[in-house]
Amino acid sequence: SAGLYLVATPIGNLGDITFRAVDILKRAEIILCEDTRTSGKLLSRFGIKTKRIAYHEHNAEKMRPEIMDRLGKGQAIALISDAGTPLINDPGYKLVRDCQTTGFTVTTAPGACSPIVALILSGLPSDHFFYAGFLPPKSMARQKELTRFAPIPGSLIFLESPKRLAASLRDMADCLGASRPAAVARELTKLFEEIRPGTLGDLASHYDEAGAPKGEVVIVVGPAPAGSDEPSAEDIDTRLRELLQNH
Ligand code: SAM
Image (tube, rainbow, N blue to C red):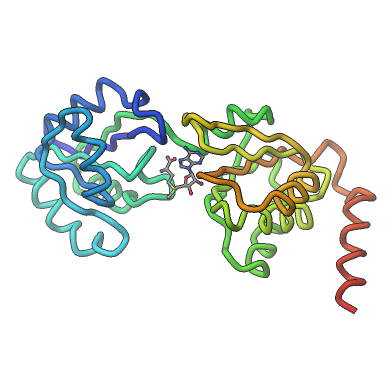
Protein backbone atom coordinates (compact mmCIF):
# COMPACT_ATOMS: atom_id res chain seq x y z
CA SER A 1 0.00 0.00 0.00
CA ALA A 2 0.94 3.66 -0.34
CA GLY A 3 3.82 5.18 1.60
CA LEU A 4 7.57 5.34 1.98
CA TYR A 5 9.37 2.08 2.81
CA LEU A 6 12.92 2.26 4.20
CA VAL A 7 14.40 -1.06 3.17
CA ALA A 8 17.71 -2.47 4.45
CA THR A 9 19.90 -4.46 2.05
CA PRO A 10 22.91 -6.72 2.87
CA ILE A 11 26.32 -5.30 3.92
CA GLY A 12 28.18 -8.18 2.29
CA ASN A 13 26.41 -11.51 2.54
CA LEU A 14 23.50 -11.57 0.08
CA GLY A 15 21.66 -14.02 2.32
CA ASP A 16 21.02 -11.17 4.73
CA ILE A 17 18.16 -9.61 2.76
CA THR A 18 14.80 -10.34 4.40
CA PHE A 19 11.74 -11.97 2.78
CA ARG A 20 9.77 -8.84 3.56
CA ALA A 21 12.42 -6.60 1.94
CA VAL A 22 12.22 -8.60 -1.31
CA ASP A 23 8.43 -8.53 -1.21
CA ILE A 24 8.26 -4.75 -0.65
CA LEU A 25 10.89 -4.06 -3.33
CA LYS A 26 8.95 -6.18 -5.85
CA ARG A 27 5.64 -4.49 -5.15
CA ALA A 28 6.90 -0.88 -4.95
CA GLU A 29 6.18 1.52 -7.82
CA ILE A 30 9.73 2.79 -7.72
CA ILE A 31 12.93 2.13 -5.77
CA LEU A 32 15.04 5.13 -4.82
CA CYS A 33 18.74 4.14 -4.86
CA GLU A 34 22.00 6.00 -4.24
CA ASP A 35 23.45 4.39 -7.34
CA THR A 36 21.02 2.75 -9.76
CA ARG A 37 23.72 0.53 -11.30
CA THR A 38 25.09 -0.77 -8.00
CA SER A 39 21.58 -1.54 -6.78
CA GLY A 40 20.61 -2.97 -10.18
CA LYS A 41 23.08 -5.81 -9.67
CA LEU A 42 21.73 -6.60 -6.22
CA LEU A 43 18.08 -6.36 -7.22
CA SER A 44 18.46 -8.59 -10.26
CA ARG A 45 19.86 -11.32 -7.99
CA PHE A 46 16.46 -11.40 -6.30
CA GLY A 47 14.41 -11.13 -9.49
CA ILE A 48 13.30 -7.57 -8.60
CA LYS A 49 12.43 -5.67 -11.77
CA THR A 50 10.97 -2.53 -10.18
CA LYS A 51 11.97 0.79 -11.80
CA ARG A 52 14.94 2.47 -10.11
CA ILE A 53 15.48 6.20 -9.64
CA ALA A 54 18.62 7.86 -8.24
CA TYR A 55 18.24 9.63 -4.89
CA HIS A 56 21.53 10.81 -3.44
CA GLU A 57 23.23 13.76 -1.74
CA HIS A 58 23.55 15.72 -4.97
CA ASN A 59 20.01 15.44 -6.34
CA ALA A 60 17.97 14.98 -3.13
CA GLU A 61 16.73 18.60 -2.95
CA LYS A 62 15.60 18.45 -6.56
CA MET A 63 14.04 14.99 -6.25
CA ARG A 64 12.02 15.39 -3.05
CA PRO A 65 9.11 17.34 -4.61
CA GLU A 66 8.71 14.65 -7.29
CA ILE A 67 8.78 11.90 -4.69
CA MET A 68 6.22 13.73 -2.53
CA ASP A 69 4.07 14.10 -5.63
CA ARG A 70 4.17 10.35 -6.29
CA LEU A 71 3.34 9.60 -2.66
CA GLY A 72 0.43 12.01 -2.95
CA LYS A 73 -0.88 9.92 -5.84
CA GLY A 74 -0.89 6.88 -3.57
CA GLN A 75 2.29 5.20 -4.79
CA ALA A 76 4.43 2.85 -2.70
CA ILE A 77 8.04 4.02 -2.81
CA ALA A 78 11.04 2.14 -1.43
CA LEU A 79 14.33 3.73 -0.39
CA ILE A 80 17.52 1.67 -0.29
CA SER A 81 21.21 2.56 -0.05
CA ASP A 82 24.22 0.91 -1.68
CA ALA A 83 24.48 -1.38 1.34
CA GLY A 84 22.92 -1.77 4.78
CA THR A 85 20.36 0.45 6.44
CA PRO A 86 19.24 3.66 4.69
CA LEU A 87 19.73 6.93 6.65
CA ILE A 88 22.70 5.50 8.59
CA ASN A 89 25.44 7.62 7.00
CA ASP A 90 23.29 7.49 3.89
CA PRO A 91 20.55 9.77 2.48
CA GLY A 92 16.94 9.74 3.63
CA TYR A 93 16.14 11.59 6.84
CA LYS A 94 14.80 14.73 5.16
CA LEU A 95 12.49 12.60 3.06
CA VAL A 96 11.21 10.90 6.22
CA ARG A 97 10.72 14.29 7.87
CA ASP A 98 8.78 15.65 4.86
CA CYS A 99 6.57 12.53 4.76
CA GLN A 100 5.79 12.91 8.46
CA THR A 101 4.92 16.59 8.04
CA THR A 102 2.63 15.81 5.12
CA GLY A 103 1.07 12.80 6.83
CA PHE A 104 2.33 10.06 4.49
CA THR A 105 2.98 6.61 5.98
CA VAL A 106 6.64 5.79 6.62
CA THR A 107 7.68 2.28 7.58
CA THR A 108 10.71 0.02 7.33
CA ALA A 109 11.91 -3.47 6.51
CA PRO A 110 14.90 -3.44 8.88
CA GLY A 111 18.06 -5.46 8.46
CA ALA A 112 21.86 -5.33 8.28
CA CYS A 113 23.55 -2.23 9.68
CA SER A 114 27.36 -2.24 9.90
CA PRO A 115 27.74 -0.14 13.09
CA ILE A 116 25.35 -2.42 15.00
CA VAL A 117 26.96 -5.58 13.63
CA ALA A 118 30.39 -4.24 14.66
CA LEU A 119 29.14 -3.34 18.16
CA ILE A 120 27.65 -6.75 18.91
CA LEU A 121 30.75 -8.58 17.65
CA SER A 122 33.21 -6.24 19.40
CA GLY A 123 32.99 -7.80 22.85
CA LEU A 124 32.64 -4.28 24.27
CA PRO A 125 29.74 -3.06 26.46
CA SER A 126 26.62 -2.73 24.32
CA ASP A 127 24.17 -1.34 26.88
CA HIS A 128 25.04 2.29 26.11
CA PHE A 129 26.60 3.40 22.85
CA PHE A 130 27.12 6.50 20.75
CA TYR A 131 27.24 6.28 16.96
CA ALA A 132 29.75 8.87 15.75
CA GLY A 133 29.74 8.09 12.00
CA PHE A 134 32.82 9.21 10.04
CA LEU A 135 35.42 11.46 11.70
CA PRO A 136 36.88 14.44 9.79
CA PRO A 137 39.71 13.38 7.46
CA LYS A 138 42.21 15.96 8.80
CA SER A 139 43.96 15.21 12.07
CA MET A 140 43.37 18.59 13.76
CA ALA A 141 39.62 18.55 13.16
CA ARG A 142 39.49 14.85 14.07
CA GLN A 143 41.20 15.45 17.41
CA LYS A 144 38.83 18.29 18.19
CA GLU A 145 35.82 16.06 17.54
CA LEU A 146 37.31 13.15 19.51
CA THR A 147 37.89 15.40 22.49
CA ARG A 148 34.15 16.17 22.50
CA PHE A 149 33.33 12.44 22.49
CA ALA A 150 35.85 11.53 25.21
CA PRO A 151 33.48 11.97 28.21
CA ILE A 152 30.54 10.03 26.71
CA PRO A 153 29.71 7.23 29.18
CA GLY A 154 29.32 4.36 26.70
CA SER A 155 30.91 2.61 23.75
CA LEU A 156 31.71 4.78 20.70
CA ILE A 157 31.19 3.54 17.14
CA PHE A 158 33.06 5.06 14.16
CA LEU A 159 33.05 4.27 10.44
CA GLU A 160 36.46 4.73 8.84
CA SER A 161 38.19 4.24 5.51
CA PRO A 162 40.98 1.64 5.58
CA LYS A 163 43.56 4.20 4.44
CA ARG A 164 42.85 6.49 7.41
CA LEU A 165 42.47 3.68 9.96
CA ALA A 166 45.97 3.91 11.50
CA ALA A 167 45.94 7.72 11.73
CA SER A 168 42.47 7.74 13.28
CA LEU A 169 43.39 5.08 15.84
CA ARG A 170 46.47 7.14 16.77
CA ASP A 171 44.33 10.25 17.32
CA MET A 172 41.85 8.16 19.32
CA ALA A 173 44.66 6.82 21.50
CA ASP A 174 45.82 10.41 22.11
CA CYS A 175 42.41 11.96 22.76
CA LEU A 176 40.46 9.11 24.39
CA GLY A 177 43.32 7.33 26.17
CA ALA A 178 45.80 4.75 24.82
CA SER A 179 44.59 2.15 27.32
CA ARG A 180 40.92 2.27 26.34
CA PRO A 181 39.68 -1.09 25.08
CA ALA A 182 38.60 -1.12 21.42
CA ALA A 183 38.04 -3.37 18.41
CA VAL A 184 38.44 -3.01 14.66
CA ALA A 185 35.71 -4.88 12.75
CA ARG A 186 36.47 -5.62 9.11
CA GLU A 187 34.59 -7.19 6.19
CA LEU A 188 31.50 -7.88 8.30
CA THR A 189 29.29 -10.77 7.10
CA LYS A 190 31.83 -11.43 4.30
CA LEU A 191 34.23 -14.32 3.75
CA PHE A 192 37.14 -12.59 5.52
CA GLU A 193 35.19 -11.13 8.44
CA GLU A 194 37.62 -10.20 11.20
CA ILE A 195 37.32 -8.67 14.67
CA ARG A 196 40.61 -7.42 16.11
CA PRO A 197 40.31 -6.45 19.78
CA GLY A 198 42.99 -4.46 21.63
CA THR A 199 43.69 -1.21 23.40
CA LEU A 200 43.64 1.92 21.24
CA GLY A 201 47.41 2.19 21.68
CA ASP A 202 48.04 -1.41 20.55
CA LEU A 203 45.64 -1.18 17.62
CA ALA A 204 47.22 2.10 16.44
CA SER A 205 50.68 0.47 16.50
CA HIS A 206 49.40 -2.65 14.76
CA TYR A 207 47.89 -0.77 11.79
CA ASP A 208 50.85 1.62 11.67
CA GLU A 209 53.04 -1.38 10.94
CA ALA A 210 50.61 -3.53 8.96
CA GLY A 211 49.39 -0.66 6.74
CA ALA A 212 45.87 -0.13 5.40
CA PRO A 213 43.78 -3.31 5.61
CA LYS A 214 41.67 -4.55 2.70
CA GLY A 215 37.91 -4.05 2.71
CA GLU A 216 35.59 -1.99 4.89
CA VAL A 217 36.08 -1.20 8.58
CA VAL A 218 34.21 -0.05 11.66
CA ILE A 219 35.99 0.98 14.90
CA VAL A 220 34.34 0.39 18.28
CA VAL A 221 35.85 1.99 21.40
CA GLY A 222 34.82 0.79 24.87
CA PRO A 223 33.78 3.23 27.58
CA ALA A 224 36.52 4.77 29.69
CA PRO A 225 37.28 2.39 32.60
CA ALA A 226 35.44 3.35 35.83
CA GLY A 227 37.16 6.09 37.84
CA SER A 228 39.46 7.00 34.97
CA ASP A 229 38.49 10.67 34.81
CA GLU A 230 42.13 11.33 35.46
CA PRO A 231 44.30 10.47 32.45
CA SER A 232 46.31 7.27 33.01
CA ALA A 233 50.10 7.30 33.37
CA GLU A 234 50.25 5.98 29.83
CA ASP A 235 48.08 8.83 28.52
CA ILE A 236 50.25 11.43 30.22
CA ASP A 237 53.32 9.73 28.82
CA THR A 238 51.86 9.90 25.29
CA ARG A 239 50.96 13.57 25.68
CA LEU A 240 54.42 14.39 27.03
CA ARG A 241 56.12 12.61 24.14
CA GLU A 242 53.96 14.61 21.73
CA LEU A 243 54.80 17.90 23.41
CA LEU A 244 58.52 17.13 23.38
CA GLN A 245 58.35 16.18 19.72
CA ASN A 246 56.97 19.61 18.88
CA HIS A 247 59.96 21.42 20.38
N1 SAM B 1 24.20 2.49 5.76
C1 SAM B 1 25.35 1.61 5.86
C2 SAM B 1 25.10 0.52 6.91
O1 SAM B 1 23.97 0.41 7.41
O2 SAM B 1 26.01 -0.25 7.20
C3 SAM B 1 26.63 2.41 6.11
C4 SAM B 1 26.98 3.30 4.94
S1 SAM B 1 28.51 4.11 5.01
C5 SAM B 1 28.42 5.16 3.61
C6 SAM B 1 29.70 2.91 4.48
C7 SAM B 1 30.63 2.50 5.61
O3 SAM B 1 29.99 1.49 6.40
C8 SAM B 1 31.95 1.87 5.20
O4 SAM B 1 32.93 2.85 4.92
C9 SAM B 1 32.33 1.05 6.41
O5 SAM B 1 32.88 1.88 7.43
C10 SAM B 1 30.96 0.57 6.89
N2 SAM B 1 30.64 -0.76 6.35
C11 SAM B 1 29.70 -1.09 5.45
N3 SAM B 1 29.68 -2.41 5.21
C12 SAM B 1 30.65 -2.95 5.99
C13 SAM B 1 31.14 -4.28 6.21
N4 SAM B 1 30.63 -5.33 5.55
N5 SAM B 1 32.14 -4.45 7.10
C14 SAM B 1 32.68 -3.41 7.76
N6 SAM B 1 32.26 -2.14 7.60
C15 SAM B 1 31.26 -1.91 6.73
